[in-house]
Amino acid sequence: MNELDDLRQRAKRRLLGLERRAKDPRFEQVMGRFVREGLLVVNHDVREHAEPLRIDDVLWAGTVEPRILELLPALIVKRPSMFVGVASLPADLDEAVEALRRDREPETFRGIAGKDVHRWLRRVGRKDKAPSRLKSFRFTSDDQRLLQHLVKALGLSETDVVRRGLRALT
Amino acid sequence: MLKGVAQALDSWLVDENVAAVAEGLPRHPACTIHVLGQTALFEAELPLRLAATRDVDVRADYDDATRREFARLLARQGRELDPLGDEIWMPRGTRYAELFLGKLVRVLLAEPEAVLVSKALKAPTKNQPLLTEYLAHGPSERFLALARKHALDLEQFV
Image (cartoon, rainbow over all chains, first blue to last red; front, side):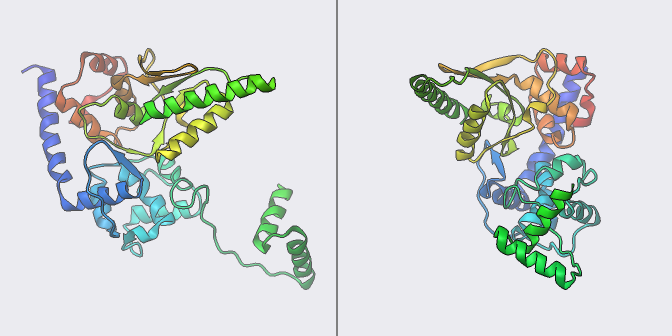
């Protein structure tokens, strides 16, 4: 057997394992949901699935189709209702999700480059929207009067007035 | 999918240019769209089980109005034009096959072997199942030549 035949035989053996896992109901359900949501497109038949997915199942399915792992952290941030069990995530997934919540590029997540994980943050759920974080400030009454004046004059929310002010100063 | 989008884009460009001439405005130039990435594999109708995110990677020489119309037509198909698609690395000497030739739009598909080598080199983990399946079906001489040229380690996929 030459080198190429040997390589092909070993690829065939590995493919058998992948095909077996692709028939597992967990994989079928995860793919069915991702395809139903328009997150993945496929060139083969997939039975659509509408129910929320267990995080463990999604992580497992990602070992068969890694693109699932690429999308998962952004989906937890932007579409948490797609999943059950988002309150207790494995440490590496939790780190990736927390980085996205701060609109930062996470570390490589299970072999997927951080930039590939981050790019979905603005492209799933509400488009072009990054997560916002709650901040508290103490304003004097003069500050508050000025803020209210700008809210009325510009027809903006208080948050948008502060945002515009920040951008004017940078 | 892409042929229909290209046809619609070509018709739009022709109509826009007819209107532009009537109004004495500049016409949109003809354009060539090179399709890269997973979309090129889908369009090549390979005997592989493919899954892809909805983004479409292309390198094109169209003007901005044509790019926006192309993005709109793709969105109607549930696909998204990747703004960074033209940054995809492709092996030097990649061959392209014509998918569509209209009056003003030409669409070319990157050869599957070059797409697979690009994926294997730049994102091996993400594309491991795809490469395993391809190798199991028997890689082409062209793929093996490109793999050798770019020192691609095929052992990681078997």
